[in-house]
Length: 137
Image 1: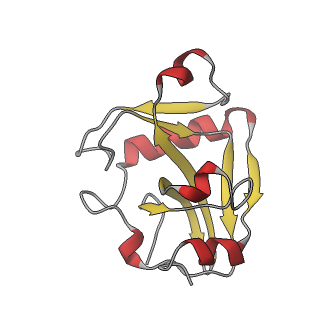
Image 2 (image 1 turned 180 degrees about the vertical axis):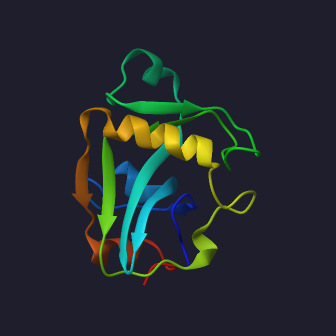
């Protein structure tokens, strides 16, 4: 079962199934899990252009540190939006293998940034999500 703080790898059809987020897997932190309702926070490798022209207003940059996170590269956590699903199930094999979650300190730092000015909630097309990820059903 995927729970709060767990980190999963998946392809997300946002803003469409042909977008870059759907083509390659990204890491997502489970923000909330209640029944079949899930909320995820997107993580992506920090790229040089993000240091100058950042499309995110609220974010948390995190260095790789196995005692804190499963990231293998410097990572930007997007605190502007949450991705929501309501009817799909996530296989435990989606969890990152070197560490399945983020530490409580990192999780709460992200929570604070999410709540700073609010965030967008984005409902994911669950049919497309299942088509992109065999471990989501």
